[in-house]
Image 1 (tube, helix red, strand yellow):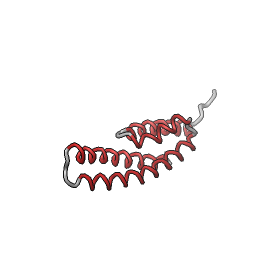
Image 2 (tube, one colour):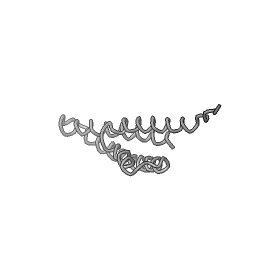
Image 3 (spheres, helix red, strand yellow):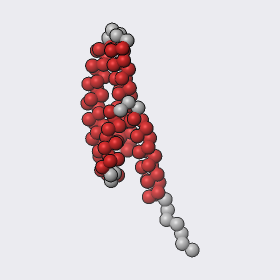
Image 4 (cartoon, one colour):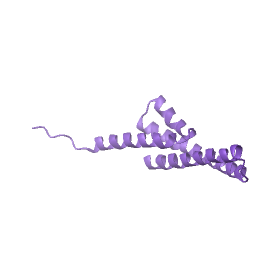
Length: 109
């Protein structure tokens, strides 16, 4: 469950950065072919963002996150580079949680 969220966070983040670069190439630099690139990347990002939303919501509901945290994770795919930082934080938090539950109980003397 965490792995599929992580993969989609990276894919969504990379496509969003590519989209931003395509927009700069299209509107600021006026490069030929940038319009086609931007169109393809925007469609791909849109569809894959929906999959990201499903995976992130599934992860958040199983991890029993509060609504604010759930919304932040869901919106991270819309802010360039935010998906990378949020994914890192979520992964560290959940890895620590799993390690704590798997640790053996202390022996009482």
